[in-house]
Length: 449
Ligand SMILES: [Zn+2]
Ligand SMILES: [Zn+2]
Image (tube, rainbow, N blue to C red; front, side):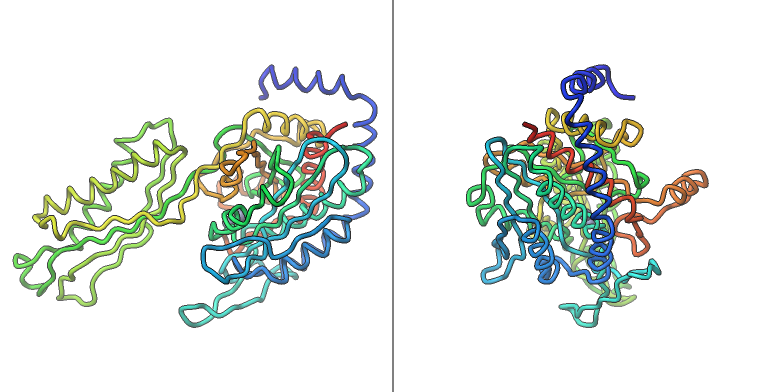
């Protein structure tokens, strides 16, 4: 499955370092096994007591305490949100270990507003008040608890195995990934200037598409860029029995929803993945009233800035064109607003990712390292690659599914609950041990003496 060049890189690398890395691998396994119970207990605790985006107070304190215990120089509450006076719970741990490159490893820390439905003995029962009233459950449904546990395990391994590498590691606990505020908050506060300047930035994300014990990776585009778009379709309301007297925004908005589907199917390059989804359509109050307005909410997923501009322009053209065709005057033209919460696509640096991939194969064995696939979800990890000094970044997938359940689901063609599902239940062992071995090996390869 792998290309010839990757194989030859692997052979060359293996020939270069026959003795000490092989010794280190066995040593690493033993050390990970010694920490396994403690890490599993940490995982279960984090899972049971999740905190929503921007609220990661206890979670970040746990991360900071563990990093300190491992010998890292730790800064807490790092980050600056747009909203003045708000606290960011970002954590930065630095371990300097002689001359060499600076490698950042990032974990996210936040959970999602979901009522957990896994039935696990360590399931979350946390509920918090909603700003809009009532309460909502909180769940680590994206596996950020798994990311944090692997991160802490990696921190422990790197501290214990300082003799095997030279350079600096900077471990960052990022808040508010799910609301795509946290990376920006840490960068805005001077992450890359107040701490050692990064040469490489690494992360992992769990996936239900890969069984535990395995990882997968993909060089190039990994995750899509995301935009939220609001369209207010304005007509002229009136009595439902006299449609000829008004301009019905519900009919116009309905036409817009249908016509938007042609952006992907007729306007975009079929080889470049694009998503335009209308996730919300609200209008009206009563059977016999034509409202003045209809509201649409869209999510748009693209892979590069040019593609993004084209899709956003097409959305505006369709909305304006269909309103005009319905006879809506220009002063009542639709209002098309692109929200500020844009995140760009996550692009894995090709050279770095190939190097990390080779290190993963050496550490885990080729049979446990799969060809990863890009998906149209989004991450604010992408922002680290765009901030000065624009370091190469790479994220790989950590298998989280029970292998037997995944095999069964694949054979039957049924859905296995994945990230953002109330039933998503990663199998923490061996996922944690695999993740720690994978990330530690990737960092030590970049910092090898
Ligand atoms: Zn998520
Ligand atoms: Zn996530």
